[in-house]
Length: 244
Image (cartoon, rainbow, N blue to C red; front, side, top):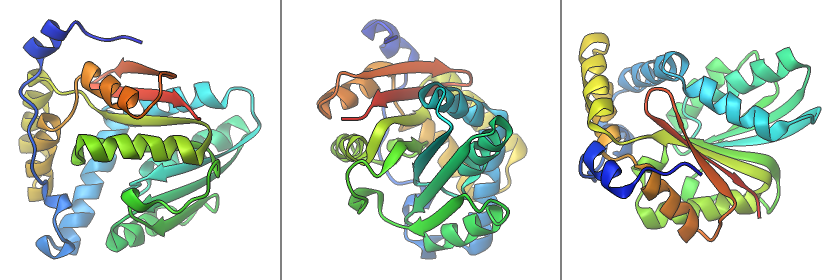
């Protein structure tokens, strides 16, 4: 497991911020068009800043030589990552069964439009803090760029639930907190985004994100030592753990 020296992490990272992003507020706080554009911006970021590549890299390592597998994607958003997984599995000749869950009904409606040509993807509304899936019901459980929205206690519980639901392993992908990442996201959202949600939530997400030691502490406090943390391009952290 790669962990920065604590002094180096302190030097590189701004103080962790708390507080709600616009997407954390009630749906009445933003319009349907704003939500759609926010998810379009997230899809662009996930495609061009490495989220899809990082997730597929770590998922492929876990799938190994299996010919079929099942995935639960928690807080799926517009389901662009399930679509990427489905496309990769098809190209590799694998059978994938993917379920995406999101708390926002409007987001699920949007996701259904983007997954219409992917029958291997099922979508449903559900609260990440009240997952109702039985033990060991999916091979792999994923959660991308969501943990920074939660408190440490909520994230510990989330990791425990992901381990409970997963037969084989789980993957958490989120941002690495640093001044450079903050400056980059701030600049990109000003240059490329016109949506107030993206402009507000993008930079704030970096300030609410993690250093490697902080993410490792969450995993350890969730009761597991069977995990690795990897840094991926464009300030992404990937926590990859075993089930059980």
